[in-house]
Image (tube, rainbow, N blue to C red; front, side):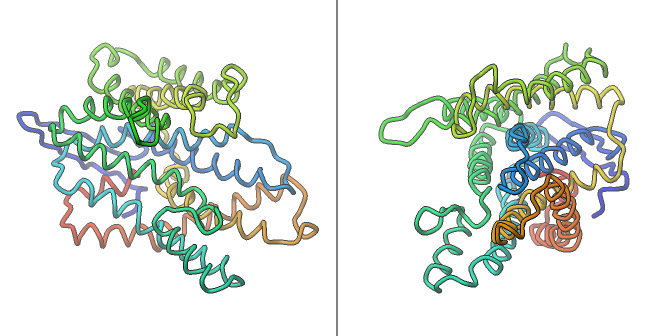
Length: 359
């Protein structure tokens, strides 16, 4: 399925409520969120390439792409899960896991060829299950830690759906805040970053269920987007957040809350007819998960070059970003999207088109 055309699609039935959602990418509901996914993915790519010694490019705010992804995920899951919960977990599993496994195998083939067989198989096996490798090495796809949060959120939302689709967003929001803040006996935690999914759900409840918010028009939405984007580089100076404290409440206040403003502003703006229509941007949004998964492989390959063979310029960051984005779009079109269609046909998922648009 190409995302470039119009998609008039979603008719969701809730018990006692008929809800019709019209989605026309580039000219309708939620195209702006697709653009935000593109922004988040490319920001993370530039951040990671900028960490490489030869580039010396400081783009700390690019790490906020992860927080924007979490907030977007909270909003989109609350927005789209008004359907029956029967296949919720299966749909989310096939959206996230198979592409991650393929990326992990590619990384293993490129990275582990000079290692002992025992270390190779151990690292690959542990990485496939989102676990750190031997001797404390990160997973082969080093952003896997964020996908652990994502999968845990899906499981929690599936539990919240037991209360019914209408109540699920509120139930999930409460559970997320408990997990984010509570320190339970004999259990690890708290896990503050779960609150960023709650911020996304809160953005959904405010923009979609809170009547007065519907009086806000495009200029208000654009103001919220601008304020959120401006806060991303400024907030670390206000909160004292440092990159070593990457799973803390300080990060939530520094980047999670501004991401919430950005998402709400994008929805409010689009509701008033201010929507992203650029097909390239929308395609990058569709390929954002592929970009997110594949760029760690490129980082790993560049780090294996001898120091004197690595171009010492920000140009290498720009060139590497353009190359990995292009390869990721190709991966999305040739591998990821066809695989998703096949798996969803296997599930008999009649709502597959929506999930092909959203992560």
